[in-house]
Amino acid sequence: MTELFDSYRSNYRDVVQSSIDFSGLPHSFFMRAKADLLRDLIAQRLGAQKPAMLDVGCGVGSFHPLLRNMVGSLSGIDVSSDCITQARINNSDVNYPDFDGRRFPFVDGRFDLVTAICVMHHVAPAEWAYFMSEMRRVVRPGGLICVIEHNPLNPLTRLAVSRCEFDRDAALLGAGTARKLMADGGLREIGARYFLLLPSEAKSARRVENALSRVPLGAQYAAFATV
Picture (cartoon, rainbow, N blue to C red):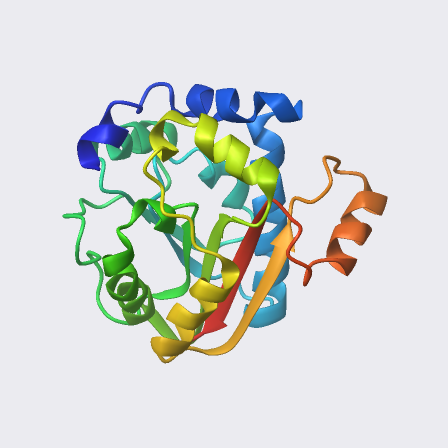
């Protein structure tokens, strides 16, 4: 896994874009949709205070500029040391410690919010429970865990995954599986939201998506829970 993502440190965005070109949308559209969702979750679950956040499996940190105005502090870890090297160049204000790929390099209860954005499908299913336990360990009581993943029930999502060079061995997990992992890990107030249903940032499209967020139609979903 480390070697796989090391090889994409310089062209990660291009590879992802090539897998979704059929949609006619830029990669930035999908990143902004995730940032908007996280902003809503933070407001709903964590209140007005800007959280200390950890992004697990952050890659080259291309998502992190979108988070600067919504978090108090930001850290990122990734199994690819080459990607982390590039992330440090891209985002000098973000903390990127070394990571051995197993235990997260932080003390218990360090963060208010921990995310794993399109990461768990790269983790072996036998390791999903441990991965979730590590996310839980580094979140303070009352803090929030959010897993964003591809929705395997969406045929266009499956097409995009099949076209992506580094997703060929992906083990997609549905929202039900993610919620069960959270429940088995002792998390509470578990919820899920589907998004990226409509290819538009218009307010009317966002209202439709919000109304249908419980229906498993969107290209991706967010599963979230309180520690």
